[in-house]
Image 1 (tube, helix red, strand yellow):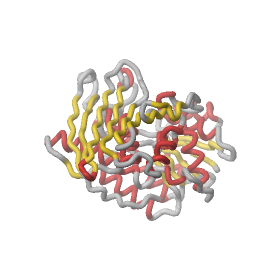
Image 2 (spheres, rainbow, N blue to C red):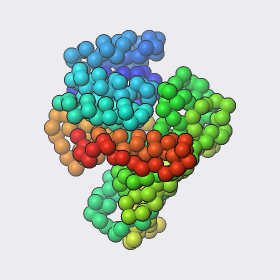
Image 3 (cartoon, rainbow, N blue to C red):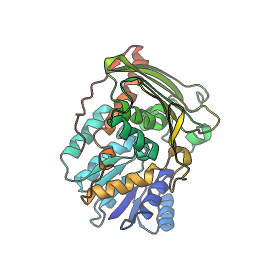
Length: 342
């Protein structure tokens, strides 16, 4: 299975490493509008370089493309890749607004190729174990959920590119870039809220970015179950995000590498990630492997974990928080991307 990577920034190296670790997978091409950066990436990873993604998409030897470009290009490039009969792994988010997300969904539904979004946390061992136990109804009724993300993203991080920190190109700040992973986990484990109310602000980075560096929100699941979300890029370091679940029969704490049920460790994974950063967990590799298995028809228990059309759910929650902040009111969630995954 031959891969091409679109965009040669920092996350592209994570994709390249994941591909390298998969038997029968080959990185054969990359592209970037920054020719020097792209050629350096190609030399480093022993693949050919294209100066435009259109050229790469017309390469008939490529079976799968990974999209590792700025957010505002994700939807356009995914649609074009699917239309050119390429399977697609897209970095999050699927798109920067729901109108774009709907166009991506339509392209997926009209294509014979496979599509997924890189929500790798679904493939962390702790997540897999908790999802299994929830599906088996081990804990009784859910009473509440919280998710907390406190990371460090300073002015140097934002000034290193010309697209981060801007509404038109990043689509938002800490919510759409960092916390969206935890928001996807909330949806994946607890379900979709029916309404949400939130506030955003720019604190430490108010002289650097136009988007938010901090946010908080309260969502309501069916049966009036609360979701509490807090996210900030103003912390001093990058601890693993923490999620709490209040069930009738259990209090659960979940992070990228650990799972506690009623304060007892069920799973503490000390394995270091083969790709990516430790606080991301070890899910990247498993997501890539599961996606390739799906392409060739080898499905297993984790195939349904692959984000596809349902990757729009986390984006819808993020966009609803932005709308709530703008209107200072509750925002209903439409869930109009459909119930069925790919």
